[in-house]
Amino acid sequence: MSELADLKITRLGAQGDGVAETTAGPVYVPFTLPGECVRANVQGERAQLVTVLTASPARTTPACHHFTHCGGCALQHLEMPAYLQWKQELVARAFSARAIEAPIEPVVSVALGTRRRATFSARRTARGITLGFYEARGREIVNLDECPVTAPAIVQALPGLKCMIEPLLSRKGIARLVVTCAANGLDVCIEDVRGDLSPEVLEHVAREAMKLQLARVSLGEDTLYQGALPVICFGSANVALPPKAFLQAVPEAEAQMVTIVASALSGAKRVADLFCGLGTFTIPIANDASVLAVDGDRQAITALEEASKRTPGLKPVEVKVRDLFREPLSPRELNGVDAVVFDPPRAGAAAQSQSLAISKVKTVAAVSCNPGTLARDARILIDGGFRLESVTPIDQFLYSPHVEAVAIFRR
Image 1: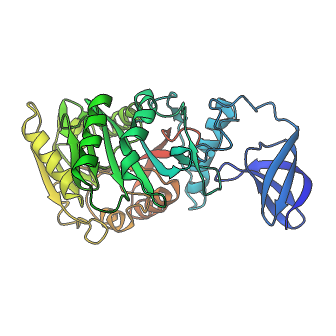
Image 2: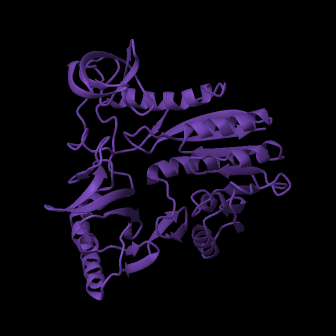
């Protein structure tokens, strides 16, 4: 049962919702800002905004007309200086919760239209194919005709992608499309499509992919169409892109991270790149140091190894396929390693950090998309004798509550 109430917003929560303090506890109101008085339908600790009675000076016009309906963005209504300050505070609070006085650098921001990968949902409706992101706190798919955050090449392909996938969709199912801007075209991976595909359907997919000049279309692990093998450029290397392999979301954010990490590791002769993926850091670091690159994704490791072998001028790159969650590199295996960079999934690298803490490694660069687990891992390293030199937030997940960060540690 909801209740109409007038609320005073006092702060932004961790997910970007405005927070009103009431006698019953905090109430979270999406699309509101600190200092605003709003009218909202309240149901428990959640509320739906009805109208803004008194607007914040920091409120601005959203970049996208889908904003508030589409669930892709949370904070397009907040002006950029205040928005970046909030992102910086997210990182600072995560470290403070671990009793770490962290030297937080200014947030590195990215431009609109630079996100090179997007995961869309698609379903068949009575009006045709709906393709887009799920609505904010809802179960329906918002049919996108624009997305200022995403690379224009992806957005421009959406009408053609609808046509391409039309015979793949049943009346009941929902498919997912992972669309990536590779260096030589779009790579499209389709998931959650069931059943055998007839030759006519496969021919349709290939024909429409050719019209769109796509590099590749995959259905799960199976390639349905390939006009060119998609590649990603890391430094001087062109690395073949396996379907859905991990990538940093924004190339210019990736470049900033590489610069920070490479600078911190300058002078190292032997570097371990853990959770290395396709070699985001491995290839640039290998210009100056030999690298041990380790990851649990065999396809990514194979692509990295092949690229390193055919790229002239690199120092030796040794690769290993290994689940670092279950089997982190031991202190003994790290003997002779001057510096380590690790870039794990959101779960972080607790086990590997514990091993690093008792190793002889002198420098660690930790890259993370989760400030909470980064701070946890930082606590382990600091307790093991490392000093936290800097933390740089990088806002590659524009207008979302997610933030990347790079932390540098020295013995």
